[in-house]
Image 1: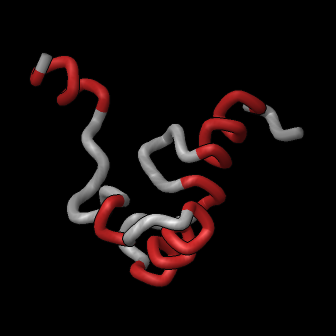
Image 2: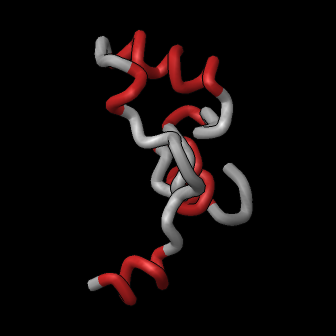
Image 3: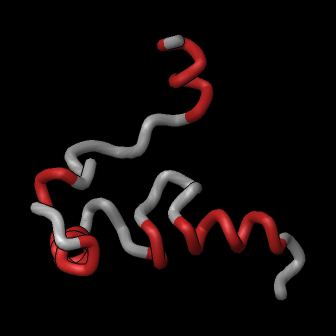
Length: 61
């Protein structure tokens, strides 16, 4: 366990804006692997632009 277990857990599950399992949304191989695991088309996994920052989501709301 590191000094910030909650931060570590959010990174592992993808809650930090990246994809689960430390996969990177900019890496097409990561997206393809995740799509294969989830049995979905890679185009259904959002990876076309950087994740939206929480503060920007609040502005949109």
